[in-house]
Image 1 (spheres, rainbow, N blue to C red):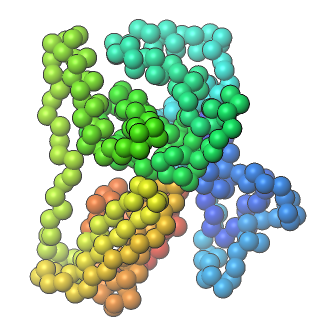
Image 2: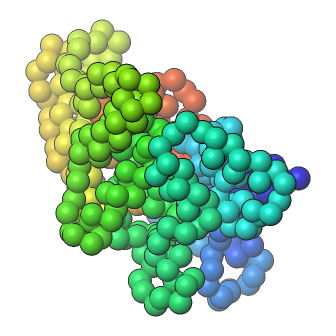
Image 3: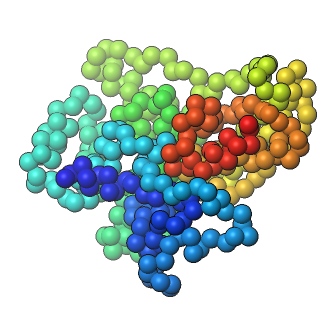
Length: 342
């Protein structure tokens, strides 16, 4: 039954034709943790999402509504994301007196990690870190929007895992057991000192913590870190006549996405190029997918197809090329990309 609560907390609808989703009763809004509309009903409480769609916008009525797991890019439940949701649920329910939770705290105390990290984990699970939502609960009236992205309420979950301004800092080259505390420090530096620190600085802080801990406890040091960016080389392709090289850049302060695209033929000759800018949503993965989609529309408008896609948003490209995107939370965007590139 505890596992059922985790699934209910992370499952939502991905809108297709809107005929299966009730506007006010179902979870379909990209806004954790409720995924529901919070305002009072202004139309029939049983109305479906299809009632909100305008036929003039060219909505694809052939796409069915789909249930997805919100906290994974592919829309499929994983043990890792389920565990994170479970920890947050436990903290919210204040179940510290439960025997199983007590055992978990005992395990935490016995972990061979720095004390400051243990304390931070403890505070996080008890909702004791001063996120804006937590401060509001303590009676401090303030704007509860995230100070970094400004697009969502700053809950503990958002400030450490969901904010798209910090997504890059959770890549494979950051030590996992240090990352949340370092991200919290990055957030505080911006909020209190108005200083923005890039990912390389956050990585350096995290590595210093790890180096000091390993040196004091094991006499070892940190291994060399792999480069932050892989060089994207222009490779010839005999499978597609043209190739789109798409570079996506995020404006941290204004929630904007900038896109630079170059379309070349197999010999490397540039056929067309463009630069675009548009407002980003709350999730970096969706912003990257939309950026690639706009580049594909540009290539199609120029009559340059079929084409191959290369981008610094590698995970999005992998979803497209491996045909595993159909059930993802942004699968409708990826399906549009797939249709254009065929």
